[in-house]
Image (cartoon, rainbow, N blue to C red; front, side):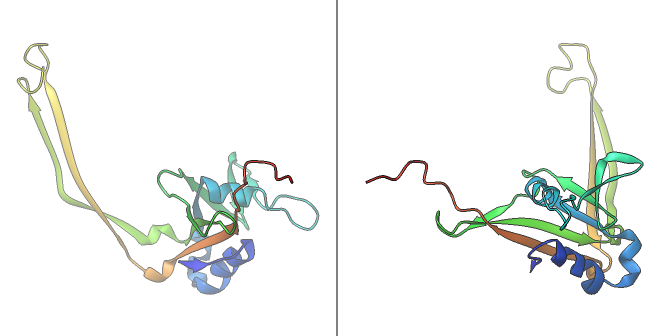
Length: 162
């Protein structure tokens, strides 16, 4: 992952690292921790950098591009260092996600049974559908995998005294 450092690093990824052809389609994807980090950033006049989308105020924009938030369980943050020098690493993906293609492999398989599990005893028919999917990146230059590392020293949890 590329160290983005801060919001300016995200802006550099959009303006310099990514080809200008992707500019209209750029999206920023992060987890809840990364979103919290972005959602607290302010400009020199005290205004938040994230702005609500006009047509849907529950969605946010950073520099005019939509920010998509995934669960911390789906896209976890990582930590490094000791308790005194602990650092948290927030994941960020910046780019044109339409350059990821979804493939259907082996189609859709549908089966039914009136004797499987407890279907027979309960006069039911059970249905099962299996779908095999895969995805591939069409253009590897379309997405920047980045991270922002912040200091998060742990509290000692007690008072020091002498």
